Length: 241
Image (tube, rainbow, N blue to C red; front, side, top):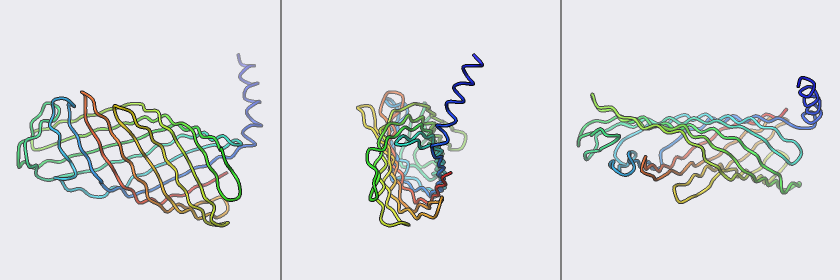
């Protein structure tokens, strides 16, 4: 067994030598678009968090580590999103078996963390553009917590979702390019879309990103109904080595 592992390691060394590692760090400011929730999905009260409660824009970090080998790309990504809402509600809300009464002041903590594994293939690559497509596995770690005085309730959920992923880069000059990159998939029980539109400024091994991202989607079942959309102003940086 040790000899087999050593042989596999020696076989991987030249492969890694011909490849290229890339890291991407994004620090984004997230804004609420809409946010609807009902929990349980078949018995709770459907209400809009963003229509009736105020919120503050939140910092949302995102880190991706990837490896290019020829036309193949392998990557892992993690992103964090935490939004806080507060205000008086206009009607009674039944959430996770707890009743939040009309005109009571409610605090809502919304969390949507996402972790993904990527594989993409470069279908087109020339001096003008590069087009990649592939698949991703997404793990969401989400929760919605309501608090009003002594009444507290929280709904958390961890789930896995397959996605299609695409990356299109249009080279404008030696220094500038335009990027569209995103993941998405729709099914009867829900959908997910996460797309970035960015201007890239390249300098040696560093690439700076200035762009806009939208994240939208949700699910509908007996356990929970939730659909939300968020807008991001994105500042990111790539480093290749």
